[in-house]
Image 1 (cartoon, one colour):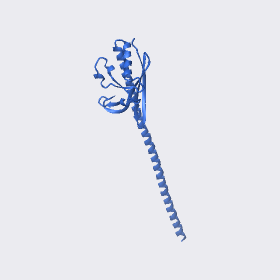
Image 2: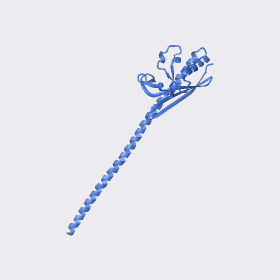
Image 3: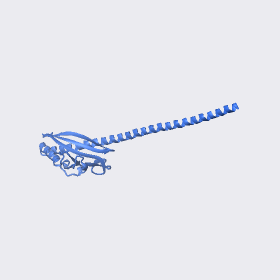
Image 4: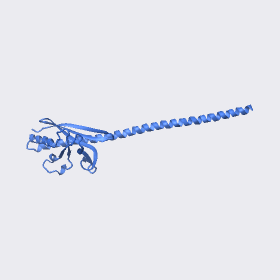
Length: 204
């Protein structure tokens, strides 16, 4: 009888140990799943941030080129006026008058459309590039489009997120400062980049 009770107790203890082992295994599994889930969420967050940062870097590079292009257009316009007018001073005055006439010297600035530059009548086609006053500081009419055929931004093709405006300030009778601002929206934020350059009446 005594041996019977000893064997019974051993059997009960064995079942308890087995149940305890199974219980610990379940807890360990849940902990492991939780750790894996947290790690996965962390990796997804980092990946999402990396993709967002990469896209921002791409947009900023494009915006930088577009802002510089705006400066180049206005500089080219200055050179055309100065070099092909009767004299340098007449050309310089005509250049500033053109920017003033199209409200580029106002707070809202102006935007330019050079899509038809190569079909404009000569002489001095650069002086005939369309300049239009911006209706507000955000210059909604200055939104650029992307032409996938030519790979250029202008006013032909698919509407992009980039807006470019030109603001001009007369520093002195011999210096005109040009600011080219490109703005774009990304996610829930709005960004902009500004390139500025002083142009001078360099022909006596």
